[in-house]
Amino acid sequence: MRFVVDLEKVVVVLRDADDAAQATVVVASPLRASAARQATVHRLADVLAATNMGRLESDGAARLRAEAVRFHAAGEVDDDWERRFSHVCQKDGDDVVVPATVTWPELLPGSEE
Image (cartoon, rainbow, N blue to C red; front, side, top):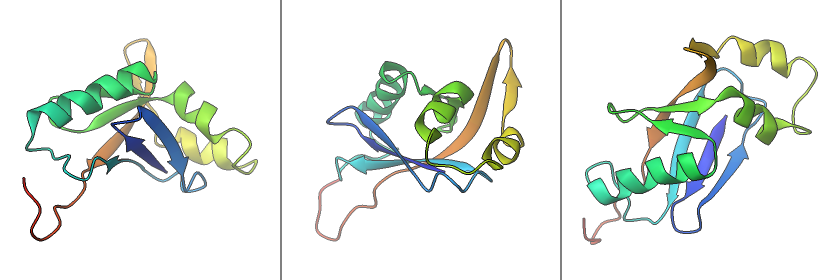
């Protein structure tokens, strides 16, 4: 599952919903966003919270709310998806979360950092 995030529009869209083996948060916009830029890291944390998707951890990984993932996947997955999805879910206190790596846009040649 890939959750494509637009930091400017505050939008999170699920792609590849059937791939329940792992979750990835892909920052798609702005193209200058980077894990090295504190402002964009903070913005990603804000967008995940504002959309009720989850939170950003201090190590740069994301923890997505399982219910939010289910909401985004509804109507796009097969009957076996829930069983496969349950294998990536983890208990976090009273919550159930999905760990996700975060991928940032790569700087284009000649672009400013």
